[in-house]
Length: 312
Image (cartoon, rainbow, N blue to C red; front, side):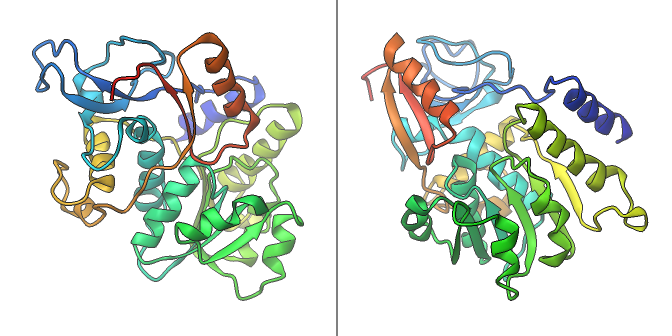
């Protein structure tokens, strides 16, 4: 436990991340060589690269069968291409890490992001009340997927808006935007109920000011006990697990009816999540660069997809 915290601290101070960003790693494929696995040639599968240093933006890729699952039958190839990482992240953060339960109130910062929108749908399916943030232009979208109360982060500082609504009390906070301003966490005892946790699963911070904000959250949340002035609420950075069972869980979350997932709990989520696609780009230099520019803008609603082939 201490070593994992030390590695995180070292990565912040040294301006290098142990959680490497690797966009465009979640993909939908058609098997061309099964290599003796349980899949057959022509099978439609989806998954993610298990190596964060190896992307999948190519016509042909080699990945272990343990990183794949059959493509859900109720989504298109384009929709399936963005499922694995974001849905698994949202599910594991909410259900495994934060342990949300029916009847609780969950706050999701960055509700219009790919992870955030998946988290909204999963939390609603579990019977939670969901409060989420985004810019005003995404209010209708979030309400359409079930958000109960919306906060436009562009109107005023988040903490100020939350504190102006004293009835808002949360059992869990999921930061899907990777907020580096420590104010939301440092003030969380005012709106995060005792026993509740604050988890961030956004991208690693860039820039000195952002790193300092993350560093303060690290010290206050991980190393500073409450009796020494630390925040009396748990804080942590969440990274997703993408083993075969996790990919199958994602398939179960978006499939209506029977599915191949292993756990009975996951079956309760059949049809709970509908993929959200921001934009689709063709597989040529100009449009691939546009896809990356879109990702880097951080003004994305859902997933950015590059369509390598016209075959469906």
